[in-house]
Image 1 (cartoon, rainbow, N blue to C red):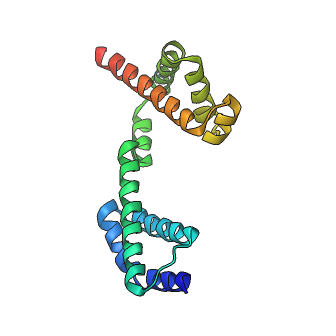
Image 2 (spheres, rainbow, N blue to C red):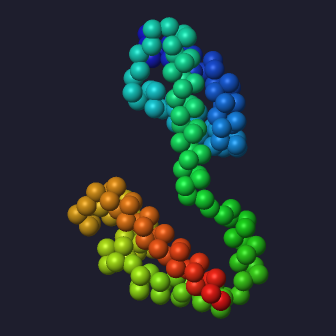
Amino acid sequence: MGDDLLTSTFERLRWRLWSMARRITGNDDDAADAVQEAFCRLWQRGRQVANDGEAAGVSFTTVRHVSIDAVRRRNAHPHTELQDHDAADATTSWDEREATYAEVHAIIDSRLTEVQRRIVTLREIEGRTFDEIAQTLGTTPAAVRMQLSRARKIVRECYRRKENQQ
């Protein structure tokens, strides 16, 4: 009965859950993703609830946590929208882009450790998953993420410093 009660309560509250997620995430797509992920988490855990009130509470709490996590991930890894890249690419010549790529590759070659270079190559160029990289290097996915994060930070800081000097 717990799964049926949780499912029916979640479905009944879906609009309110989505509204709460929308307020937290700031956009419709992330809100829909948060509601879906929350439902999947609850379903996978097989959370047993005693009554409708407990099911509603668990649902709202899980959607809130998933939404906050989505905002934190988005803020930790900001990105430029694809349309912004298209506009920049239209005004940037091929030679300028090639020069930028060359600068970044020079930073990678000169400033990163061998392990960091290997991880950047496997992840960014070959598109491997963290698990695949960890298996290849004989380490853990968490260690791969940490090294990749450090490598990106080094490249970003060196590039910005070089850009500010010009």
